[in-house]
Image (cartoon, rainbow, N blue to C red; front, side):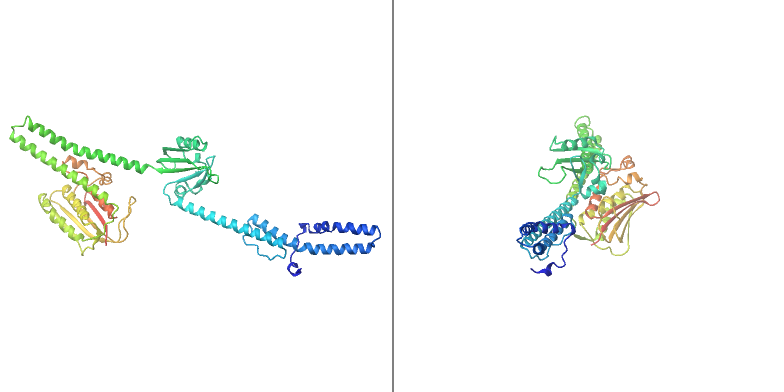
Length: 472
């Protein structure tokens, strides 16, 4: 027996080591007592012999007891989570070695399982956190056990300490959740308006988790914001209604005059000339409206395709000025170009940028005061003004401003200028022709180019539209 291995090993006071030695030695004690009783052995030698047996049993039991004591400590520490290191003490006893190896194998197995589950949990959490819509997991009592990042941003980091009834104030929603929790139905879908904390129209999908799912969660709730979809639906509906109305008016005029020309004005040459001129104007308006609608549709279809051409803004502006010079002369107006150095090329769609500048310049001539100037300014700026509604490009940009001396536009009207079919009432009163789509087209072009549009208006300086386009 290698005693050096055990000279520093201590046996705990409450380990019952002494009791164990005495119990093992008890049969020998009875034998020596009988031998001494029948005078087959003197009491002295009986005591000496029994003492020797005690020493022998203690020496025999000490290694195994000490090693088992170490194994016990290791297992107790593992049960408390206080020891994550492998048990590597060398043992002299086969039984202790086998127990230690079994404990180590079990420890390795559960450490691996724990790490795997933790990694899977982190992976699942990361996936859920990337989802844009709120997702909640609840237990049988409606307590929120888990929530993804979107939910925590919306409802607060402490949302997992709350009950679903304390978060949402919709009776219909709570009723649907209760039905799922009571297993009256496997899933529920409903649309409700949540005043707090959303203040939005919400679509909710509540579904029971499968029976084999682990943990306390019994149902998952997915929430989808319908506000944007509803707004888009309304915009599309309004667009169709407005387009139908804009086309119906000239069609009614043309139909009415055709009927008149076929009946009462059939032989009236003067009436025919007047009516035919009006019909031609209405047909021209419808043609312009249809062309603008098609143009708007084409731009929206290409919205996800980033323009990649290098466009010479100076050449485009020169072309626009040249093409609109006759219209300016007819209104006794002048187009003034203000720029310093050669303008850098911009990254864009040449056709759309020309359409954009021409629309703005044409509007400036149409709505400007007679005998005034329309000023087109071009300059390089360090960055594009940011927008809360959309993303703009980083870096330097070319700013193209178009100014006329028309009447001041109110702030209320300024905020609606890029809406489809929106026209100022004073322009309608002045019978100035227009489809109300020019600035909507301009806005879509600017969005595709990741630029921006600003509008300022005052009685003194007139109205200025400034377009920002990112350079090459």
